[in-house]
Image 1: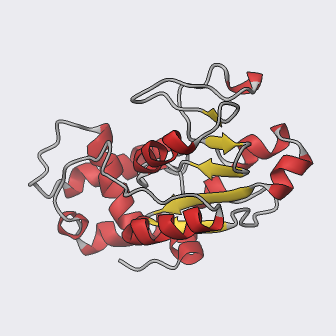
Image 2: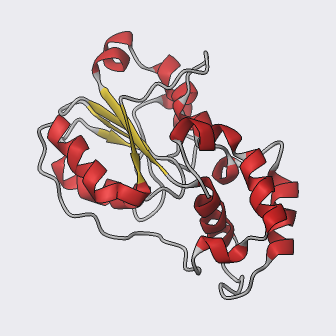
Length: 206
């Protein structure tokens, strides 16, 4: 997460959606009083005591909204990026299991992961909708970019904030083949069921 008081924005970093590419692009533009919570490539903490012991920087709306003033919450531009849920699931599996052979289907392993992490998912396997919705289930973002059109969407964000738009590079990616190659029909349907909210809210298809 990044909270920029100079440029009046909040960046919500949803896991495995290109968050570090965005972080690296934004950091040179931040002011001295701006805040970031991150634990990979560098370590930094928000100036919020409640998060001192958190070792990640992936906060949801419901994590952060109660701890910010109404003025900041209502006036700062809030944005994030999301990703095709079938693609994100495969990327997460390979990121969390680095020894997997990326050229092998591994359908049985993918099913085991779903069994383990649902219906009570860990951070990386949580739905993307759970990061952007407030306590009433409403989308709290002012802009939701997609990793499939990341540079174009990032350019729009920077234009909205009157910032230069650096070219994004790839950071912390997990190597694997095209996500479609890891699915059979049964696994495709299981992921669709688990991440139904993401598919509907962000308008994704397999």
